[in-house]
Amino acid sequence: MPDVETRKGDQAKDLRRIVGMQHRAAGRLSGLRSLAVLSGKGGVGKSNISVNLSLAMAERGKRVVLLDADLGMANVDLLCGLSPKFNLAHVVRGEKQVRDIILPLGENISVLPGGPGVREMADLDEDALLNLIDSMSVLEGMADVLVIDTGAGIHRNTISFGAASDAVLLVTTPEPTSIRDAYSVLKALVSDAAGKTEVTVVVNMAASPEEGQDVADRIRSAAAQFLGLSPAFGGTVLRDETVALAVKRRTPVLSAFPDSDASRCIRSVAGKILGLGDEQEPLGPGRGVKSFFFRLARGLGLRR
Image (cartoon, rainbow, N blue to C red; front, side, top):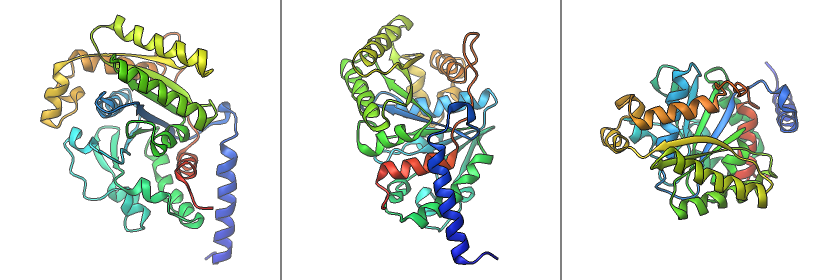
């Protein structure tokens, strides 16, 4: 059995390797891909998009783990009809393993309840963080994509998820306040991630595809002109009363009303993100789960 000093030396090597991963070219990526779902304000349907987009990607054969990381109003479990007994905090404290807390939602998809565990990561010392990252690496063999449902707004914790992820899905609605706040998220991301974040804009609750396109064009134009950022347009999700009905049933709209306008729109968004269009590149691998959680802990204020 390796002694304590040997294990610490191995952990230090692992830490250096993870840091190095952040600087590798995209062509050398080979791990799980992380996608953070952000919004500038609450009430834009971000969690619904996170849940149903995850289901849509799972339908396309991707293995998906959905992390509920909304520190203020975690509600993925309610939208999915789940009742988790444990969450990421139990893993952070060493009380449970990842496999003990993860909940199956359907074929190719599982939910990882975050709870206060994400916040508690910031209080870990380096050795404890490395142990946690090692325990989270089990996700690498369970999923191709880690979808993170974050909190709304530009709080440091929320932006840290975007900066740590391989890509960001920014959800807005046509409301002027939502558009303004979505742009504020982009500004915060550019500052925190040095403009290196891959961002896709999705317009939810739009009256028509044309309205969604117009909203996205305005955000993308402002981002290009003032932030030097070029977000992609992931598509429009039409306003649909079946979404509210599905929430009342505690069932994702993709499952409750698979042929609804909202479900068809979300499947289209999933196809674009996965690069399934004729002129799109297929979704490639990401930097891996270890790299994601290390960057996240740094962003949350890891003790040094």
